[in-house]
Image (tube, rainbow, N blue to C red; front, side, top):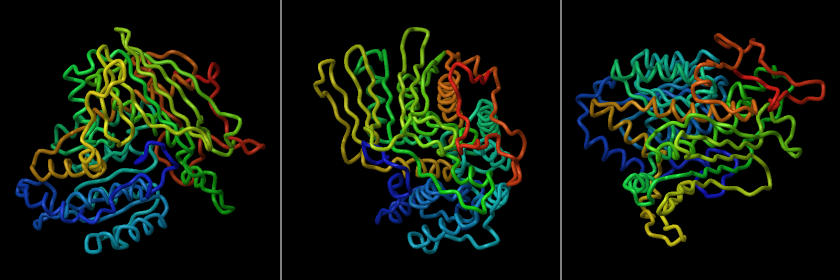
Length: 446
């Protein structure tokens, strides 16, 4: 995501926590804050971080938090697969040699490993298969732990409701919730949004959102794996685990659009999508292209497109069309504003725009915790996830759906209840090795 042309996700392409000045910046933060009011920290003011999900995204989140505050330690870790815990620890230890304190008795594998992390830590970082985000976040808040929840918050309506419960509970018990909608912590975008809110492009009448990238890596099936293990290791490719590409990728752009519109939600959505002939059938149940139109009662629209394909044009760009001008976002590049003829009227400071929003979000979150005023951003994440899920359901079903219809449906991907490695996954490949996919006009979710 650090380039204008999106590429296949990996720890090195998405993350930016390998900075030589990291420890110095974190130390300056700790010294500037009133640590006496920090709840959950030990007497030495160390914040114990717990990581749930030790893949590239989770390892990156832990690195960002450690970079942002030198008073943090990685204290516990969980993943379905123990070798991923080892990989995360081995990746982070050279960067933070004295701050990775995760002995074997604080390493928790399996689908119930998240409980051990919550019990042992002050701040819980959740970046695993998105299906599990709601249950883990709600459990963390119930345990009165601060929590970072990666986007999307959920893959279905039932999960979003749990995130809303966690948000309300956090406000009651004083725990903080950080939402992984990273663009809100990009300093250049913040100034651009302030300018648009101030009327510099006039009234926003339409927003174009595009996220076109290569597919996530497919991990080759091994003979000793069960079907459940194969799907868990490739969860991005299975809708019941990852929610498909509108919640996984386009959510970033949609969140920026909602932000620009004052977090007013659309009232309906319709769309189209499917699987292209070149997209390998073994890539699970997800579509490889989606387009969704979000409608507002006053006629404004958000037009969102995403595609995952090899050898095709890549793009991560948002255009805000106003009555007086336009605003332009492109991943983490400096945003700019033009008049209606394309003349640039303002461009964000380049140096400011290079500040890592991944680190910035954790810096601000940890700062709020240490100040005794942890912020709660669960509603923001729930709303943006709801917009993404609404769009995906509209695309899959081929129907126009209102926001309220989707909420009232309480749609939940099967299976229900707690999962184990022995649980039968809800989808299996046919004799031809292909998984069933949604058929717009036939598949029903309501």
